[in-house]
Image 1: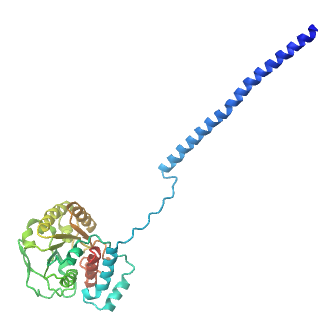
Image 2 (image 1 turned 90 degrees about the horizontal axis):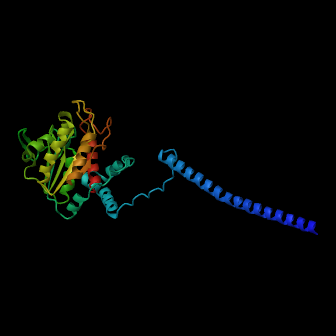
Length: 329
């Protein structure tokens, strides 16, 4: 009996020992999933860090949602339609010529509208006088009819550089294209004050000699000759002074960047791209309207005369079309 009791106690003790061990072993096993979870989270975090780093270095690229093209405003669409419809009548060409012109230029994207201020003024009948200041490109050198004597006798400049009359209204220059357009919209006083060889410097030094009594709208296209005779910094300073004087003499000042050139008669100190940058920056700062002819014409083409500086009649008409398009006329 005592032996049986001892065996029973031994068995009971062994079972207690096994339960104790089983309980300890179960607790250790229960902790393993937590450890595995922590390790997984750390690996995932490290992977995210690596992916972000690769993206910052430009090794990985993420697809971007394309931005929808901006819709054209009704006013812009209407202006474009009106511009096309009136082209033949304003330029004095036939409808067939206008269609041919449209066809030949259809591959080239139209210039963007930069301002509707002038179009709005025309619509309200607020423009009765316009004065265009420029150099030989505005006067029409190299265009058909340039040698004709002035048919207005209007003195466009009288000052330190001498005295000059307006070029003939029959010259096939962009300024006279503008003249014809303006005349059909109530402008009774249009002056093409383009003088061959003139610079922004002259406007800065003696604005009264060139501006006269001013006008409702003044257009200035200068910089071609400054590039060959002044530095970029000097041109910038001259432009700030001269354009400020012009703005004080009108309701609306329009500043035009000249077309690119590769002139053979002189060496440029800076190119027309730099002139465009200077004028665009100044206009943005001062609130003037800026129109750019920089890329309107094609070098080594029928747009230019042999000097690669002065536009031909065809090239000058392109300048006018760019002017119209950018101002929604």
